[in-house]
Length: 68
Image 1 (cartoon, rainbow, N blue to C red):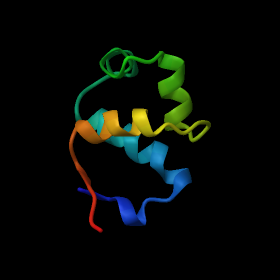
Image 2 (image 1 turned 180 degrees about the horizontal axis):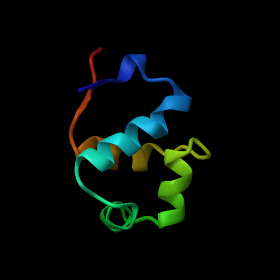
Image 3 (image 1 turned 30 degrees about the horizontal axis):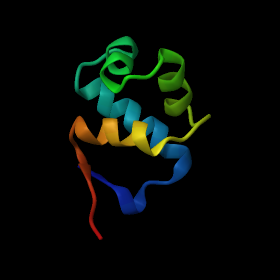
């Protein structure tokens, strides 16, 4: 599980990439699942853009723990 309270912006993309890879999805598969372009996924995972909607798609893959 990933603890959202300790997740810093620069690491968010890397963490999401790890979630995608652990789920066995390629960038192309995840982009289709998320309804975005592959370029959007690449940018997000490299920390070049941020999107709550896209982050929630990663969250739905599982493995993200939100403790408040």
